[in-house]
Image 1 (cartoon, rainbow over the protein chains, first blue to last red):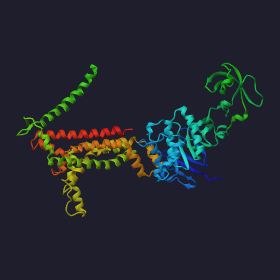
Image 2: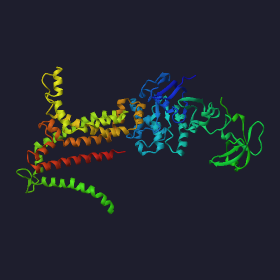
Image 3: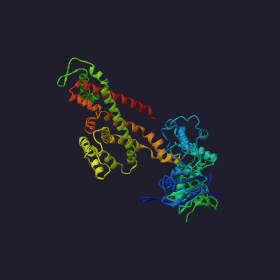
Image 4: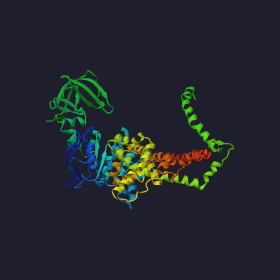
Length: 321
Length: 275
């Protein structure tokens, strides 16, 4: 098996009166898109900053290509960060921002070619002479990416790089980012609190909560087989019934009782919520609890007061010990 | 302009006219008259007072003033920048800022005299050096240009530190991290990110230090001992011992004109350099 590109072994970060990261172990494989997902304060950004070298771990070790780096200064590590606010140098042009790292490395001969290539890669040709204040938010994000990618880091660290973009642009940039990562083959460590981002972009992901690793796996494993109630709830809505969870899109509604293989309940429709691409049907069970079913708008012929059967497949149930 | 607006602006106009414009008009008028025998001014009107400025004796004093003010400003910048950077990055900013302001709580005159006690032949520095055997004869620390520069740097350092602190404190710490992340060692981060981005604070500090240094008269008088004459002392002398009010007035106006031209040049560059 390949040596991991990045290897965190039992890393902890203790702040005065607050343990930000607790005994975290992770390995990133070469060329994978790995996400750290969790709510704010879960330790994901602290973890990223320890890899970058802006914070020192209180315990544990970090290895980059089998070399221990946790005691090295940020400028002695071949990783590069895309900051949440991009942190472009406001007094330097796009070109000078991208050259910054190469010049620090003493690159002279093919400097112009490398800058041109990366500008083409992120489609920023023609903007070389602009200052960061003179380009759009999406372009600034691409400059930040280019500035890091041009250095060919072993791991590219991304700290919520899409959160500053407006929602429409965000989905488009998400697709571009994934394509870019495939294209350059660089390992990405991506920090986000947006589960949709993590699910759609990652090869593998880790869910963190309160500084602890909750679950590690592929997006499918984590969404379909969450190992804790926290992970199940954080990745999407769940109907909780006697400790068993069912996601709204797994709940089906029908007028007739389904086959005996399915779990079934009689419910009364209370209200319908139109969400554009789907409809949430809120219904009440006989026991008095509310269940939500997500259905396609093409089958939404229900109205409040309808008595229906709500059912799901046992394989769609989320169970925890 | 509405009547109400005029009413509310009236106090500031009264202050401006009575305390700034009227005295300036008097100074301008004096500068164009002939000196009286026992001070004061008499007719006839003349431009002679301005022509006298071209006397090499006076030009040398103007040159010296620029030199001393320039060197003092440079030292303020060299000392003030690290201090401002330290305060901006400290977790006890308020404590250090109040220490920077602390000297203002005592009279400038008293503080200048304190420097005389430190620097004179029998002063603290010389007697300490003599007692420890480092020197035999006292060093000539007082009554020279060096003493004047020390006094000016001491007096105006806070005016350099405060605007520098204001820009450095606003500097996004992510930019410093980004520089290190891209492979810049601390010296390169300082030279290529921190210093260029604090340029507005430097310009403000340079203006705030250079202008009062150029017009200083108390510090060169006390610490320079009359040997180190600057424009300020020349002006002072015209109104006291020399009893030449018209020439003093002309000198004052020329100093003011120089300062305004410098300010204009500086602020013009500031707006051009703004992002």
